[in-house]
Amino acid sequence: MSKPTRMIERRLRSSMPLSVDDSGEDMDLYRRNVLRNGVVLMVAGGFAPLVRADSPPMLSQSDPLAQALGYESDARKVDKSKYPQYVAGQMCSSCSLYRGTPGAAYGPCPIYGGKDVAASGWCSSYAKKP
Ligand code: SF4
Image (cartoon, rainbow, N blue to C red; front, side):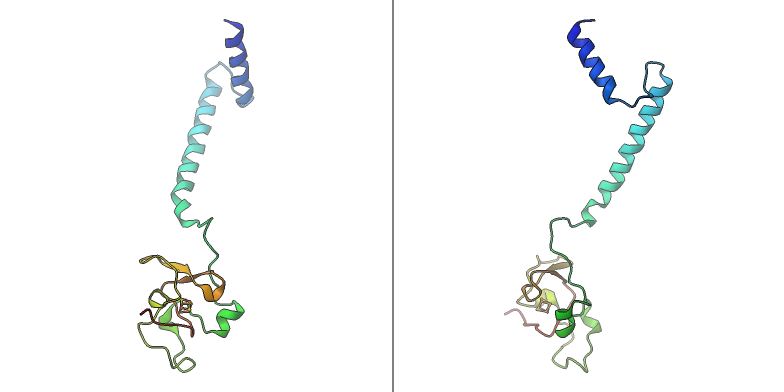
């Protein structure tokens, strides 16, 4: 075996778990671990679209401004006695301030500093899109 080949082999062995050797038995354990970790990564990858790492945070209904403006993440639950200007069918997705892409479940609203609001939500700052 040439010196460079031995160096490469030594380097590869040093990156493997200590239990790995040429017996074959430990290699099976190593392969099982690689397979199991791969499955875990694939499962985690399947949930990746649910994690919105680079998008703004969702507006919470407990946010003080949201409470002051009567934000409701489900427009059907708007208290009509408190907000008589609400008309059934109004929702963030049809508000001129809404910045979400059409069809998205949520999108930014400048009233709340660009935080995401539910497309099906509503608040008293609603202004119908022209
Ligand atoms: S201003 Fe418009 S888009 Fe923003 S939360 Fe209120 S209704 Fe929704």
